[in-house]
Amino acid sequence: MTRNATAPRRSNCPLNVCLEIFGDRWTLLIVRDLLFKQRYEFKDYLAAKEKIASNILSDRLRRLEENQIITKSVHPTDARRVDYRLTDKGLDLAPLLFEMALWATKHEETDAPTPLLRRMSDDRENLLAELRANHLGSTAESQSHVPPQPVPNRAGHRGPNRTFSK
Amino acid sequence: MTRNATAPRRSNCPLNVCLEIFGDRWTLLIVRDLLFKQRYEFKDYLAAKEKIASNILSDRLRRLEENQIITKSVHPTDARRVDYRLTDKGLDLAPLLFEMALWATKHEETDAPTPLLRRMSDDRENLLAELRANHLGSTAESQSHVPPQPVPNRAGHRGPNRTFSK
DNA sequence: CAAAATCGCTTGTGCATTGCAAGTAACTTT
DNA sequence: AAAGTTACTTGCAATGCACAAGCGATTTTG
Image 1 (cartoon, protein in one colour):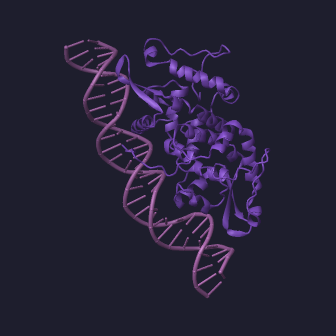
Image 2: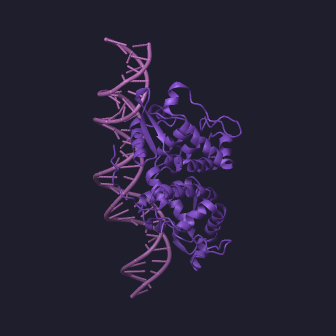
Image 3: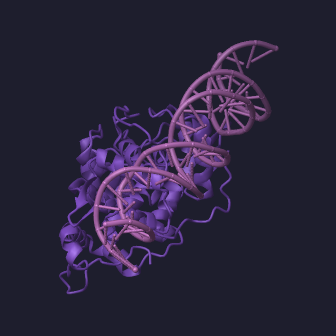
């Protein structure tokens, strides 16, 4: 759709760099689905309630891969499907998403689950580790045979296998 | 330009709420200028090196005010000028900007000053207090008579009166 | 094993947003 | 009084986006 190969940055201010990568209405929602909702396939992003158009989704996935925030690979047991995953660079976006969620919850009307929000502010390191383990742990391979296994956290609770906004 | 009065949210997911307010290439750059660069007037945002167009700037300032992230008031000694300021809601965006800056610095090529970045990760609370005091302290009134006075921090250094990306 | 369904896209088609250049009204400075 | 500044608005062309439909490869179903 749009070729973005050698677009020069408007500036190298880190905020501007972020905005040239994430400064649109959709990109971070895909990251949200990957990180919080265990959505790893094209159809899953289409199913999100914000209703992204398929051509936009296709474009954003391509850009995310160009920016090395996600990787794509074919599903091990179904050649039609593509398995999208966050790279370490992509997983590092978690704190940014936390701050967004906390700000929105404080200042706007949202439907985020309170327990998760509390962990974003008070138990950030453990939550981060959990999300990371959960993401890396549930490969397409393991998913194809058993339903996603939530990683138990150190308090013995279930892992972050919950939708972000109920 | 665009009327956005009663646009219903696509969802009440806090991330989506944020993206409907900030999900574009320009809005957070204005907040950056307000928070880090002591830029409080229309012409100042136009002068930023990302080169925002004046109609877009006008539109974004209007939306920021609609969302109660900034306030506008006439300059006390020059009726042509408008003084834009962050509200508390707007100042609360600082941690989000910190995370963006830290992510970009870690994963992309940027030109952010290292000392400031270090404080974003290691001295966040004090930096936050400084930025807040600095912003509230330098009113248009005081600016019109004396050059902006940086607020000294607890270590006796000069305040955050530095550009964000040199 | 043929037909139907699924999956990850791509291709139109219009409408909305953006970027650029130029203007303008209300001031202030010279 | 003339020239500059400031905060915008307006017009227009280019780009981006939303919506609907289609398509090739694969898997599932009867």
